[in-house]
Length: 292
Ligand code: AMP
Ligand code: ZN
Ligand code: FE
Ligand code: FE
Image (cartoon, rainbow, N blue to C red):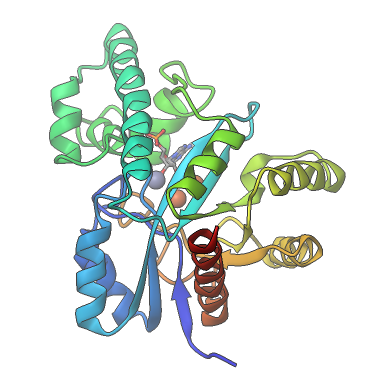
């Protein structure tokens, strides 16, 4: 039996977190984690730096990515890809396509905000993101700093969150495309925070999960900051029933999500065993790929 705890879902300054990949690794070490996966939105640009920092600190590291897939409102479907190879050309083309989807969306958000009398520019958003993937939390931080809203949350509620006037969808991959492209990139697709699907009942949740399994999904994120004890139990049973890997993490974003601490998902920690099963599965799949 393995002991210790791990963090398998978090964001750095490569997307919309506020700590650099090195700082994330340092905090993981300080929080007692023995393994870390960085899962920035639509990019693996932080993976190299995080891997070096984790190596120097003596903790295990696995590269990851988080992709949002097409899914009916008001739900959202996020798919994590673990063990993707940052040097794989398929992964590079995947992240380029994902970033193009953002580049199409972002100016529309800014134009709408301007129309609503909110003075903000793409240049300010780019400066706020400091070369990273432009995320709405960066924009929310600008609106907060300029006094248009009193919190990041209010920026989403009032302006840029789903259902708010300056919300625009970005082009997304279908779940099938997201799963296939993660697998082609050497990664394991895992359904993130199933609570955010907002399924109406257990039967609907099971149908969604079964469809994803048929498409090649390999795991379910059972522990997450949005999951209370009853949900963790429910998703654990579901994962076991479908023979899926179980994963977990806090979804830490630094001060962009103030109430979330690294390594702590609503008071729960993620057992190291989840990390070890994940690595075993990656090894099995890469062996199978070499043989075929
Ligand atoms: P984007 O990838 O640019 O669409 O932005 C997604 C990010 O915004 C994720 O980190 C979400 O957690 C965050 N986000 C989405 N909706 C909200 C909300 N209502 N309040 C706070 N953060 C949100
Ligand atoms: Zn985020
Ligand atoms: Fe997510
Ligand atoms: Fe996330």
